[in-house]
Image 1 (tube, rainbow over the protein chains, first blue to last red):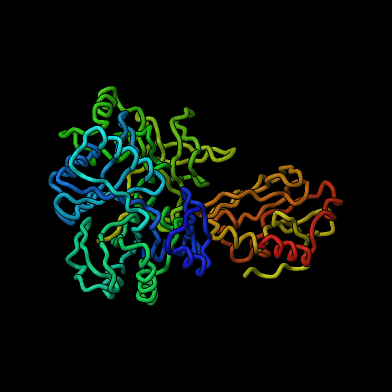
Image 2 (cartoon, rainbow over the protein chains, first blue to last red):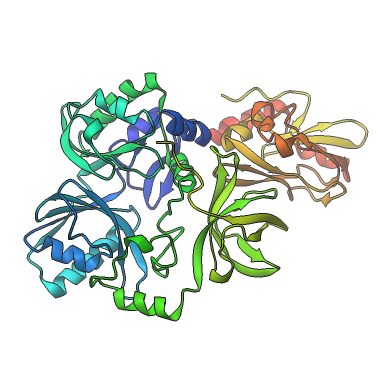
Length: 363
Length: 132
């Protein structure tokens, strides 16, 4: 398994380590509920060094990105972040990734860990055909990433940087020093809370981790593992690539229509429009258990005794104190409040379809 | 650190404990080590009373936030009672695995099976080996 540069810190903290897409990652330090609640109430610090980063530079960098991504990036401003999707020719989602506009003609794509190599090959295969005036570089190895998430994140990070974080808007970033180390500070995340994604050289990001631990612990911050990251994102109604979507699923079947811009050309658009015209058969929806039991990935979903779909993510929600999940169901039974049942081992447990997200922070 | 294993009962290598009531019935649960490995238990599926199970078959299910784990019957027999409190307070297993967090009572179908279980001292020895 590959290890991030923070691996030894997780071991010293007695984290339970799991294999996540070939990476040895902390799933929990104490337990998921504690780390989840610390993030909702104060802050959580996550090692996200396993995610991928790809730089795209050159006078036609934007042309390449416009062709490979579903979102229109023409109006993206410098220091702005945009979520987008990378599709195959059939309109299926290879990855959902964020685009950082570092400067005119200079971008950084932040990819999910597992599909990173697939992204890299796909983007390069398109570039080889089109030969845009730009270069691609996979900088994942040398780029480290920490997520600091939760309502006290700003207060904690402000202790370590001169940049006035109050002026940093959501889904925007700045290049600035943290604890004397050059970083990219992005106000964004994957938990449904205010917070930051911090990028720095992998060799020195451990120093930032240590300083944040010292600054954050008195304010209730805890190191948090992938277990809490998963329950936090699910409560916030966010999808997990490879679990809630894969290359056979298009953005129209999951809550990603908003990142598709039909007014521009992009790879996969023709297939996507054809899917739209022939009618979308299935839809990803939120579900909530009303009966006993916890829906889990792979459990079957029924409506009036008919099988209508499958659970893609499911857990016990520590904030809401009930079992929640995401499920792919037949479009005709996808309306909120539809009564469904979930096959949990040998019982049929009652549930209903609900609107996303399950949890929204108070602003 | 898990709590020491009480000496008033026997243990399976799957981390269940068994108290022999001496009248052909037993109480079963999971060890403190097991609850520690599972961490935050948020759901327990109890067996139906009257259910007959063979030794090493799943008799209950415990779920943490992240995982689903079977509890294996440490002995063969019929379920005669279950700990209903676990339906609303599954965390009792985390808080008191050897006491309030008991899972079920069973009528033994073969008392001889008790001989295959471990004493508290042997179970602790087994845990030490398993951790290595």
